[in-house]
Length: 98
Image (tube, rainbow, N blue to C red):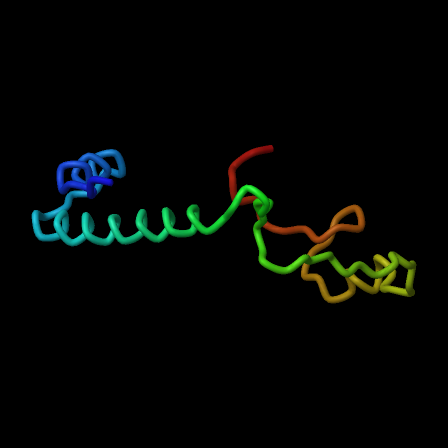
């Protein structure tokens, strides 16, 4: 597999709107070669009998039951607010919209 050339790195830099020096182009070309090589090695290891996965161990989310518990009333929640309107916190307008 041919390596990444500095010209290809320069093209990627232009697409990303990055100005790269010739030293950076050479440096990044080597780094990208290493990354592509590592990905290729992983692809070689994964056989057809190994399903694609995002994590090596099976994971399941632990969820608790959604139960209603006592909480603050609207008046209690708004008791320390500097301003309120229609049982809501009133804050200064910032976007200039109505």
